[in-house]
Image 1: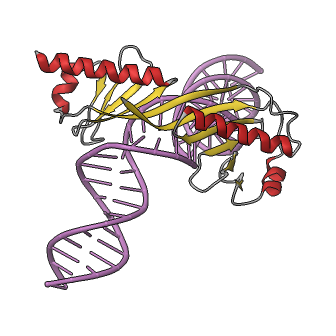
Image 2: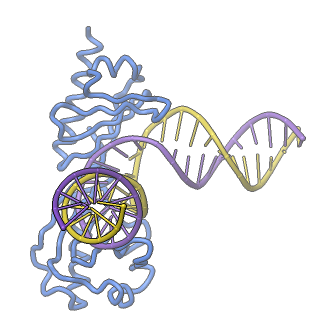
Image 3: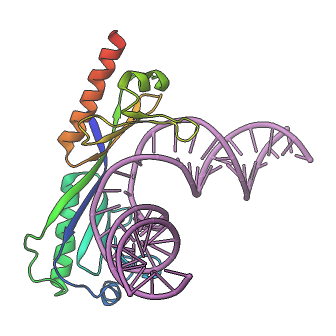
Length: 182
DNA sequence: TGTCCTTTCACTTATATAGGTCCAGCCT
DNA sequence: AGGCTGGACCTATATAAGTGAAAGGACA
């Protein structure tokens, strides 16, 4: 149906962190911290692994996971590290939530995006090929945004859960079949 | 008009998609 | 020297976070 390519999640440790010291203790290349460039400390446990951005306030973001499970297991690894270092008490349940799913989908047909913009409704679409080759479609449900390309490839983003992303894509396919029927 | 406070925005990261531009390198 | 190719990077989308800059409004 749709393939997840990126999951963004965020959470909080509820403790103030000394990022300078933490970055020194963990060391490169796992930890990178340059407050002149960006206020967050970057953590990457392995090369090409998802990125964890940690802030002074104890809040953190995980980007680059390709499943909800990977996101949660990264969080576990992160909490264990901070627990072992004595930064937090126990890796107990702290606030954590998936914020955004980015998925791709295949519509299996080439599309005339000018005609599609009219068919889907100009109030729900943005298509300026000089600016960007994809059509931006915002379904009335407002729970996700889809980028549609003339090759039939689509990107679904902004969904809080996988079901929402799948529903948005399914709804688009239904609307497409209705448009091509008439 | 000057000062202060609030609001807004850009920055950064990941990721797919695709068209365009720009530059480096290679071959003729 | 000119043409071709490939790679990098820009455009747009969502989302979290903290910081700094800029803009706007309010008040003396």
